[in-house]
Image (cartoon, rainbow, N blue to C red; front, side, top):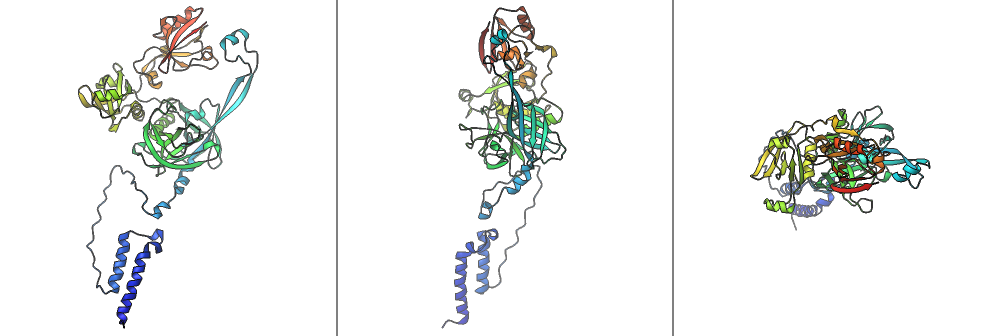
Length: 515
């Protein structure tokens, strides 16, 4: 017969074996610890039951001292337990969603009932004999409140051409708003809510700390169904050639973005704004998991211009134009891949020329950040303050070197360079100007380009009816090269029975004859 003490030990050993096998299932998920803590507990029971004596204690390990640093990046970890997987984005949404608004933009459109409407020839000889019909067109998008006094940022294409803009908050309140600034190049617009605050806001994050793989939330009003939140990750950075605007350094995300999300917020896991949702890549009109957002650092720069009273955002002036680096150029210069911004030309006496930048150099870095393409360099310039000394990592004829460039404000335009054209000619009603560094910078034209450019075309003017657009470069009229506005006005004042001209639009030369 087994002694009482031995029998007790045998029973306890059996029970401990069962506990070892079932411990992970018996302990609640929120109370589970690491495997080391479970084994330590079981070992203590064995020592107590089997009479192992007093528990040995290991010497205490001193906790390392935490020293403050200037910048602490967020710690990124993958889920390690069931408890981690059960976490929710709900607290983050509750804190940020009230600052995401709906933007309603209404515009009145005159639609003619005449089948010859818009044809200059028939309207000149037969006049406008049939009445116009006024129609109201509405656009719906999203926006983000960034200041408690009611400053809202949205996309330019949401409010483009709008006669009336309204903002609706998540709590049901609706306010009129006015446009402080709009920029077609970057597809951004800044609004001011005409109502008493304070309003809920989302604070800006630093998109320079954003990395591929970071979890993000997109908040907006897709298809007008109401405020919607989707989640995803950052799929890529500095995406260009998207085709939405002249800007080309987008954040790409797979968070579902659909029509109506434009102008909405892309936030990180700290609840900070890292982007303004702008566009999607889709053949069907719905989300295919490829969405693009304008980085918050650029949004902040544009918003600061509007808040200071400016109505035009002007990136710093460097006095140089840049092209892409092709595979052939990269191979010839010994680069492992085609990356960087090739200096196409340098303006005389500009900041780049004074710093020693030369045509043919390749800019590979800007203030320690890699430059993948010219649009990425344009983004870095746009988000850097005027007066800043920028460090450029340049590959030149003599090898790799660092070049320091002081960024300046674009030189002021001379009022004498601007004219409003009149008379009996196809350009009547258009506003034109000599190409200046400031104008070239705003229109994203080569800094070395010279000539006369169309800056404004009223829709009902003769120039508007003939299809001229802002940004058209007037190159030749009736065989005369147009070098400046004085020559243009002289040619137009002489009159002609027909007009043969050449314009440059989007890098393509267009020839046309009007009789």
